[in-house]
Length: 428
Image 1 (tube, rainbow, N blue to C red):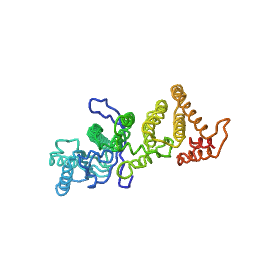
Image 2: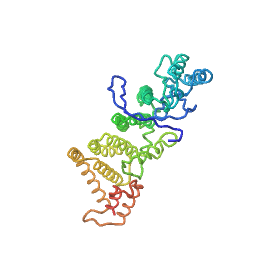
Image 3: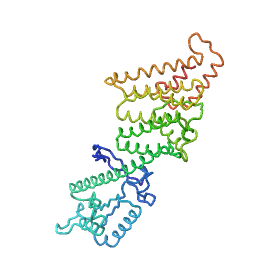
Image 4: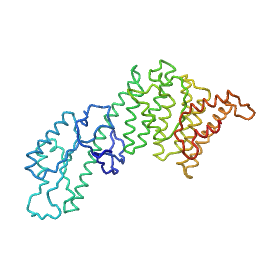
């Protein structure tokens, strides 16, 4: 956050959902930034959700009506015209009253209260403000001698600010969801690209996550997961889309799943480097990223057992998709990926599972342990490491190739040993 950006106090607030959906308590984080023309984003720009401003605010500490008439009125008029030109309707005017009832200043109770006069003039001069009174408010300065009134003023300001932010956010979400639905419905067109749609829907997931609606964020990734699987299945009965062909090249890298937010961020940057998806992105990397994001949200929901229940189908489905797309790998590469990924999931679940969850957790991990054990046995046979086998130079060459294909260990130096360190130790 730069020195010009000011954070706003966050507090849970009830959000009334659209389309008859139940209301939820959300936590909306926002910050104040200085106004600039670059922030004047047209309302018709549907591609922006997270980066677009939610609410435009005008602040004035105008001390009296004369000052308001001479300078502030024209300034507000110019500001509102700029917003109207862009079709922007989400705005808020704040009059900071720093002139009346200040500590240490004795004023006659017969004197008029300037704060009311200035605010009334703003409301009377601008029909848009007059028709929506909640978009203009007076905020008493901290120097006000009546601390109770000052506190009430601040709470009223925060209440209106939160309500306007949520109203704007809700409206933008509805429009964005409609836009995503339109893009999804055109998925059978020749120039449709999954990664373009992926970026759009993930913005929606990020938006729900920012509101602490982790279950709804998870739904977005589950839909992307299912949609990708359907494209892979459909490729067997027709022409493979160009974007899917880019993932179908043979490769000799099998980076294991890593449930680290830093690794996920790195993968996402790789996916969308430049214009569109990077040409070196692999199916395994896409699957790693999707499952890592799903896992992160499941843990935020305190559901490690559901993470464990999803693990085995995830690994088996990925192996199946590689076979459907006829992607060939170095012998043992897929077994390495499965083993590394299974251990990563098991280690992560164990950190989050307490004794009360052990039974439900273990019900799902027993199959995962068995699958990992089978893949380790497969690697042992391939590399001549099983009892009764004679280790040859060809086996050693195979081990070197498999270790190289694992890539850099994202958990180097961590304790206990990382999945990659354990596998390297087993193959040595």
